[in-house]
Length: 322
Ligand code: STX
Image 1 (cartoon, rainbow, N blue to C red):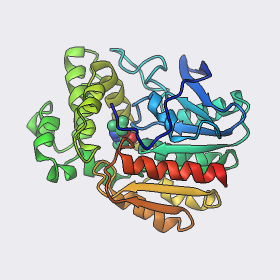
Image 2: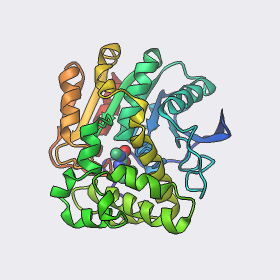
Image 3: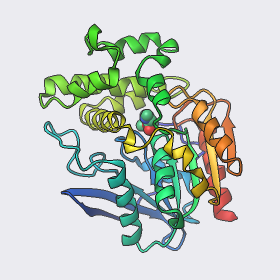
Image 4: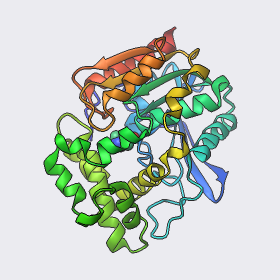
């Protein structure tokens, strides 16, 4: 699915499990690498995309104890948000932050590195701001903070300037009179219990995102993300978080930098990121000049591109060897 030449070789987990987090939710988790190594947790994007095995490979397996988990409702976690009558009442930012910290304590980890891209960068900032003493370092990629301007850019027409052809497919499931509020219009369809309504909407939503996150379209990534089950969970969970603006005050994550600025941090941003454009990484950099700021000139949004992978690997190698 992905060019992973810049990454470490494929590895399998030495331990996997399901964490009971309450509210009927079970969280799939796995640990790979060195059981005695430096702990790191990988926070996936979306929200709602789930983890993939290649994401273990950002970390030197001799030096890191690598924890991946699927956030509530997606990946191998249950109940899955693709179920026709899924109820996402217990899927909120506060729940995800509590799950991360419960997982940390269950694994017997006192402090860990937090690595997150895209939505994972927002969740990493929020987790670090809630639990600064549990975080040794942060590696943040494709910075996303769910501000109004970011959502309007990607889901309400800004990015149509660059992808007018793909935008037509994104707006197709929504009647013309509802197109001035796409996130809300999608919400009504994505949460309709009838698969004949929610599946095509979910596939259109996920296809828009999958088709615009790389410099060059990646057919395998688009196919994987437009699988009906994966697309339904991804689109529903993303849309649910966006309708609720992440349960944050506007600008809260960047305003919260003073509480975490002592944490060693690397920010990696693709220059041509259309999904989470560089304006947000720049605002974070301005608020947090001590954090190392790496702009990858030949990359878009996704962590599947080689130059971004190299920059992320440099960051994790640097922290492991410091
Ligand atoms: N969503 C950003 C995000 O986290 C606003 C994200 N978008 N696409 C992805 O993640 C994939 C890399 C899973 C395609």
